[in-house]
Image (cartoon, rainbow, N blue to C red; front, top):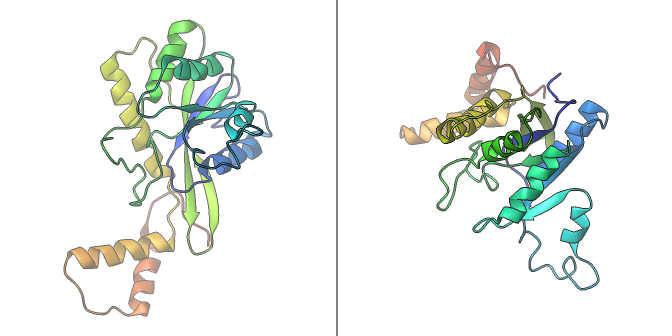
Length: 236
């Protein structure tokens, strides 16, 4: 069983589409029969500029807080904002967090843009909770959303929970955060679209601009599926 049921966890993963948190929440609910309750971390300006959702009569952020979805300021996170998530873990409830900060536009699992060059600090929350409760167990649970753009089908694949050593130094925490991203790679579900994209990309960077027959592309895709040792293959 990959899901922590006796202790809280931070469920983290790649971020490829706007509705990723909904799919991750639903997948967790289905896999555990509703036994694992989750909140979520959201940037606090996500709904800014949408008058129907942010008005004197209705505030979507206030509504989301009733289901443990809290916002943070990306550029100037406050202690009060962070404390909400630490307290959530201490109370036994986990939450969803995307350490890549925003959705990937390049196809990479983690697409760091602007001035961001490292994954978010999941270890900060784990370390803070461990410091507040000497007996608590808290973990990071990897989850990859896989989306096939042809069939429009989604799968969510979970990996084994990751535990930060109690009393870890800052250097150990940074190593832990980087390791969390590596854990996501094996959870990718390979599909034909990815293989075709990789083939065309490789031909392009090697200057192979001549036409390529569909049958040849199909043959390459078939051979990859026949020979790969990767654990997760799109059944379609």
